[in-house]
Length: 338
Image (cartoon, rainbow, N blue to C red; front, side):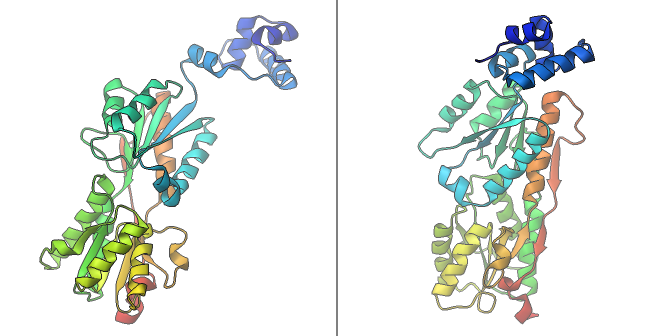
């Protein structure tokens, strides 16, 4: 039989309000009484009504994690599962649960944000890889709702955690330039996203400082998609590129396939550099030179920041830019060009 607060109160010989204070971890309860109530709760396998508890405490201990990307991208790109794992582990450490929201190509942005904001059973929101001018971001800000972005900030956004995509991408392209490549292209991510824009900026800055003239034919959008990156690489090969910076490792996979299918050798005829350092990068043939971004730390730091906002704890910084490092392997051709 399902037990209620009144049943627990009778078994413990205390008032219903005392049981409520114990369940909600509130003060002003004698420790012996608290322990007796907790023992009965365990013995009866009592589970408090979460909705009722939230009404009393004004906290649900639930975090909404929003990925405004198509379902297919969320689970085919290893970035998102890795990020979600780190967010979940950090939330569990603080006794918070996770509610996951994933975008849909067929669903308008306003309707998607309506569904999230109309669901009040969460304390704060993490948004990963938001697109430009995402209405959810601005509505959360205007409502004074606790939120943190994982990725570059948007206009007027203060709470975010990201890597310095410009610096990291610039260093990756500088590496290709130092290897004496002379026709370097790039395959960008979706250019309605800040990370893709910043990685393209890093590419352009490195090319400009090395004296290369701007050639728009060498910049193609791959949308963080392997198949689209394959097509983009075919076009770049037709333009005579000898090296390519890909804005993600998933896109680097497509580029590698295109080079191989063209009868060329990765790291010998064409140098390739990716971004992310996914688990598969080091085991590719040849191993992929790529920018390692600390995905687990991104998730942990963002979750910790959000929980601090929710609980009114001090935050040392309202934004964090983490460092990414270039991992030099064989796909860039460093072993044969030095």
